[in-house]
Figure: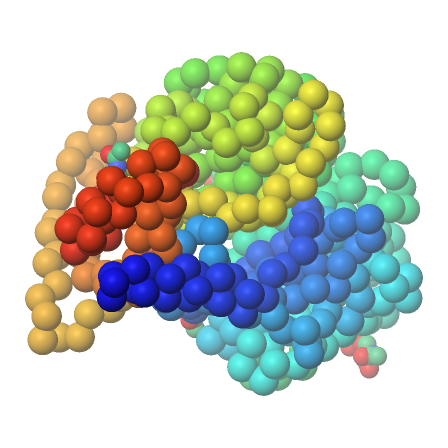
Length: 434
Ligand SMILES: *[C@@H]1O[C@H](CO)[C@@H](O)[C@H](O)[C@H]1NC(C)=O
Ligand SMILES: *[C@@H]1O[C@H](CO)[C@@H](O)[C@H](O)[C@H]1NC(C)=O
Ligand SMILES: *[C@@H]1O[C@H](CO)[C@@H](O)[C@H](O)[C@H]1NC(C)=O
Ligand SMILES: *[C@@H]1O[C@H](CO)[C@@H](O)[C@H](O)[C@H]1NC(C)=O
Ligand SMILES: *[C@@H]1O[C@H](CO)[C@@H](O)[C@H](O)[C@H]1NC(C)=O
């Protein structure tokens, strides 16, 4: 009888967790910025530009169906915003910059910043007299930005609301650490050809300072086998024809970098519906090589996959959130959060943070030297094994999933009895999807 009470307590606990947590509404074309153990979500679009601001707590384990959202309702973005560009910067990398995009408040400033320490939003108006090029200033939507190790943020491409054309501009934002109120915003003199003007693309910075630009609405109609590279050391551009399988055009996808140099490209609107939703650009090859790993579960939404979503790699997981998918030309908002284990591209149920273990427990560091097949350079891979802890919420949720699994199979009695005996053993299995 005690065990029965136990189950009811779990069921009650599950529903109370669901009720207690903040549930952000559906959206697409939002921005995300990862700072420390928080993944900030900014704005997005759903009938209107949204000023929502909330974060996902990455310091604890969680189940993908009950992500620990925290609403920053008391610090909403000064204007609704979607299809903007964002990245982190500032001293301690603790400031979020949000630039351009569609706004609900027409008189809003081009650049907003949010300091994650002081919790204050600022508007930055552009000082036209300082920068000559600003005479030809264009308000851009759909740029994409990355931050380098010197705190410079590079923004590329976009769609101009003035000239109604896509852009091939590289614009750079510098934060003055000594004078935090001063930011410098300038356009790089270096550009690639007009044919590379694009929006709906992705921008990824590799650890060697090369920026990789993939896909988007491009004037040049080649597929994503042709990528654009910007060398931040030399301030110049090249394009590269990748090796591996040939992939068609792709827009509004995401690209996230693993710490061993793989760019995981997910979803997007594809020219060829046979192209897999999940493809990987391995930058350890020269030229870079497209791989199409088998994901253990079929793509979530049949042939379409998500677009206008967000993807961030944190530790071993890629976190996919929001966006839309298509079923028979019908556009539907995705209200789920998904996790992919980036070690083997399996869909995972639970996120576990990588913890920096205190010195009393051992951290095993192994150095493996491998010669890459094509390139002649030596690659040093450092793997640090860190101990992760199962979080009770995640475990309880898995347990309940297991219980309901028994019920739905119609084996209520057998299931209950079996459960009572096996309750200790089954909770450690991480179940892949449902
Ligand atoms: C704009 O820049 C000029 C030159 O640096 C400076 O004198 C002026 O005060 C600035 N204006 C504003 C509004 O910041
Ligand atoms: C800021 O982030 C960059 C890129 O991730 C990193 O290289 C740099 O060391 C960070 N700076 C500080 C002060 O944390
Ligand atoms: C850029 O410079 C950094 C540091 O000076 C170096 O580690 C990196 O390999 C360089 N990148 C390229 C592509 O040359
Ligand atoms: C990039 O700039 C460097 C140094 O200015 C130069 O040596 C190199 O040839 C340039 N590369 C391209 C592709 O223009
Ligand atoms: C993927 O890797 C994780 C961690 O190494 C492991 O727990 C999981 O079982 C693997 N999944 C598959 C299908 O191999």
